[in-house]
Length: 136
Image (tube, rainbow, N blue to C red; front, top):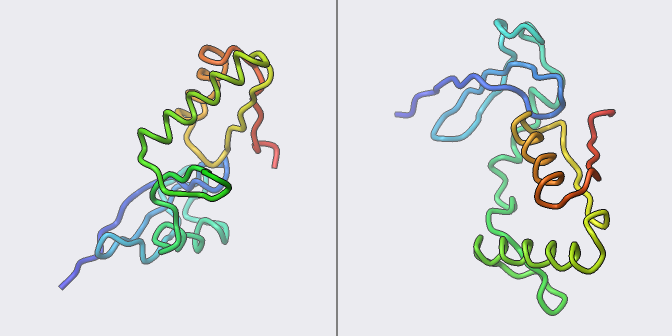
């Protein structure tokens, strides 16, 4: 017999930061509701926050890196993918300068993730070319 556990979290669909309570059964989200104790949304949710969670368990969701080889995407190891990214960014920076590289941050991720994104661009790459979807 399975039991349903409740997990408090913050919605990742926009930068508002609504509090959610996930109902989890057999390690799968089965329902989402607003957290009435959350000061931002006081238990209310938008349609995405309440119902757009099936993608988490979608069978076609990517769970391994893909690298294009000979025109086709093929599975790669994480080490191979990181090496591919690092070598290509290094060559672009060397050949065209740091201003040739930009990064798109996201309001749907954590503040910590966005902080690391801008820090990486400014320190490792040497560019202020950072934008995001925070205006939408």
